[in-house]
Image (cartoon, rainbow, N blue to C red; front, top):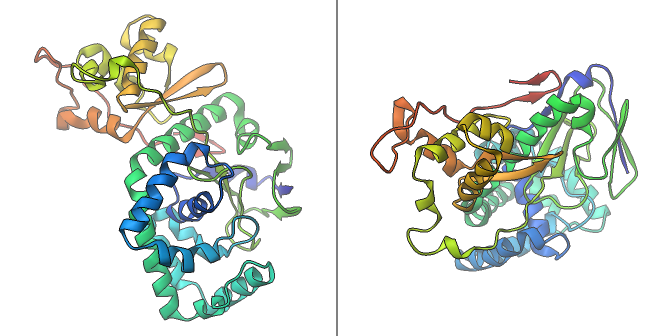
Amino acid sequence: MLRIHFTAADLTRVRVAASPDPLWEVCMSLHRLRTRQGRRPHASWCRAARARLDEAGLVGPVRSLLLPLVPRTGYFPDFLTPAESAEGIDAGLKGILATSPDRVLGEMERLFRAGGGPSWGARLAEEDLRSGLTRTIRAYHDAVLAPYGDDMQARFDAERAVSARTLLDGGLDGLLRSPGSGAEWKPPVLTVGYPVDRDLRLEGRGLRLIPSYFCRGNPVALADPGLEPVLVYPLRHEPPRRPSPGDHGQGGPLAALIGRTRAAVLSATASGTGATTGEIALAAGVSASSASQHATALRNAGLLVSRRHAMSVLHTPTPLGSTMLAAGGPTGRLRTSAGGRTPPLPGPGQTVVSASGAT
């Protein structure tokens, strides 16, 4: 078990990551490729990833360079997931290159002692080999993660919306119980499942929660207690939708989007906290059952993501849905099938979740 100890100052410095962390996703996706455990939500991705890696000539480099650094279980080096990765893949790769040789050498020695380190690991302290590592990581990311960026972002946004609602409804206590189904919050200690028994003392630094598309099972934390404290945990995946007969012919599901009502339904979800079916009904001026039907059509067309939250279903726009909302340009309007226009539609909001609330 991992026990995370909070001080009063730490409780004011809990935040949820603003976007998927590309280097954490690289490491977690490598876990998915090398084991069948927890693969079900990613089965189609695994099949496509193997084909893409083969087409790009990356099977050998990934097998010889990346997989040995990220064992299926246990420790892997912290320098592979630097704090700079929160700013994007380019910043993250620069963070790897900027890691001091002494730290790289120490972490590789720790990996080797854990029984998972490659014989050449110590050479990563050399800048040339680490540059080659970052080029391979970039190629891997571009080949098998970037094509899924919209789906990853949509799931991530849905998770952040649920986190915001959880904070508003249940306060910080509720938010700290959300990282994984086994999280237990008994102030001032958060306990989560972990492969080893460990204590992490925050000591006023706060905690950054990072929902991960590819993480499965237990949450993950950095091994070095001196680094910025983070907790990476699996976001929830809805079962894949099975196509219905209405999905084919006569224009497919996108044809069902034409009209003012569905534009209003989509607009109602465009806030950092999403919208429940009841809130959609109120905003669009329709019944709850009608709001549910419209949300289903939008979800089937890939414009919404729906996630259960407490006793409600919470809907958030996908990147494609946000693009649809912004399609009217500066006026923020969407054209209807009859050539008319909807009322002005707000663009997608940006929400920051912290211990003090959501804005």
